[in-house]
Image (tube, rainbow, N blue to C red; front, side):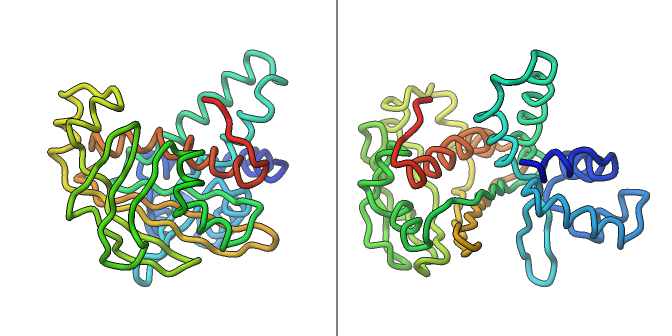
Length: 262
């Protein structure tokens, strides 16, 4: 975690994080326009933030968009929070909350983490019901081929809909599928109020993408959940707090064969 603390120690890099917190998913050009920094300086600071995993990037055509990433702050909080005095713990908690909620400044959620495993094993963990049930509490019925439909089994509810489909399947590199339908059975099984379910169901169906990239002895996993109507999306608000927990559990399972209790 030395890289994280080094990155956060510089006020210019904190300014860049503040800019992304205000409006996530900016290009280098947009970041330079909004800050009193030379393009070269911004590029150097972003490289440090990317090395510390505080910023992750996603290609959109010719542009590279930059997003805040909560994974390293989660790791600090999860591993070391009990070693800090109250003031430091509160500061970390505030930063952790800010980064996890940063997705609300855009209509897309992006989260990156590194898992000590192989791409093949990670792909299996994302698709095999024996794995997904352990860290997610969710199972899928599908052949994981592009254009195939999916059935979700979550919290005792069976969620079937012809619009729940695999959009892209390139094992073990990239997987994209549409999000599940917000049925009344799912809401009852999950303890979701009907008012909230109706708000979720009124929005366009969103899409989640998993990108797997070898990184030495680890795999870089980037989760991109998008297609929301805007930053005030009820579904976006829900998945922004849910994905970090799911991914943390996935990482723990693959690295220790244990699942944390939340």
